[in-house]
Image (cartoon, helix red, strand yellow):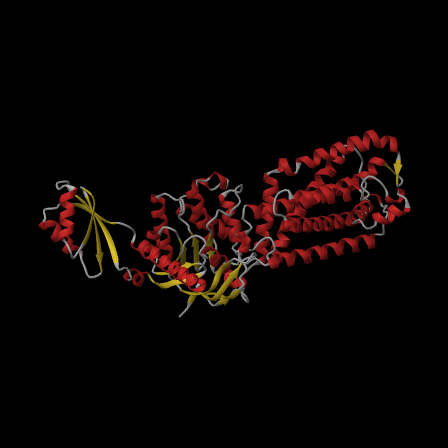
Length: 323
Length: 254
């Protein structure tokens, strides 16, 4: 099996002693759409920095399509396209120059680069701005410019570090479509994001990193299957009072209801329960459901629980140590 | 990987940068040098008389051209590379498979282009004040190329270490300008007392200015062989330092 990315025992300790990565192992298959999630300061950007050679590692090994960054750095770099978290282009250069120069760094001739720049600027709806300095772009446009720039040498692997941060929902969705299309074309995509809905919708595999350690590394399906309880919110037609609704929820022992107000109920369902049971009960008590939704993103619930478990374990260890 | 395309890209970007802001980069040296010509050449120079067998204006022209080349080669690379660090667009090159020597050569080439272009502008301005004579054009070309490369490398090293915009003005203000003024631009070091002549020989700019002046006037306070040996030594040393710094990622990689 070909791996787009193989990381083993990767560690990074910054000057001053902060241990950002504590020997992580990770593999990403070729063609995958992979999510790397974690809270702020977990080690996501450091990992990406090491892979793209912007951060010097302290220990461990990184291979990109089989090429070790210690021995074949230039070859490894040629496969990667990076969309960093921070804007990192010259604010004074016109868009076309930024793209054509970037392609040149990868050995792409100017004539080929100019055609590619046109293609990606048009696809990302930046063509009208091609001769304007980058500083004149809006935040969302700047993000799209960085995606176009990362694609100029037609990389086999695209790494996006929070590409949709600060981008409005409409634009975010169009970026998702664009990324899905790239992935369909065979480009391996590694994505970090704080929008867990984004990871759930786009990615097939996921790793969660916290405190410089990988706390979960699995497929999105398997991870979501770990979800024990899911909370649904029902908007109901106003008819009964809060007291009457409270009485109904107390009668129901099998299903855990909560009354939010006289037109909202929340229901916690575990894996053995299904929504039909809820509808039957509500129907039998003449409670009319107007609409229904998930209270929170499913992945978000798991993410919080995984991070909390780790924090709790750490605190227990500290307490044991103190004893 | 075609390194020549990467080199051309860096060089093109650098040339586009200083020509885009030509009012800041190309016009000021012309104005400054015109002032030098008016004040030191015409007003004061006419009272000084001859120096090294030439009228004072003719004597200082090579030095003033060289002073502009030095200052502009240095400041171009120092400000461009530091801006790239500050805006983080230096990462565009660091993530790409560009060998370190190509990054160094690209930036140094950009600095040399600006230094030489400013040198040509200043030479054109000087023609308004004095008839320039050429003794050996090859010495002129070799000196200007090597000197601009030396100071472009110096500017690059300064930018690599710089943590703020202040840091890229400290070296030019406190080191480069005094060395240039004391480097025989306005006088022949043979006029100095013996002790200060010895001290002046530790100043690399003395060799550059004198070799350049030899190309125009055929006179020099130092031997040409020594001058080219000194310049070559500085180029090799500074290039090696720049390569080591970039390979280690000093100031570039965390």
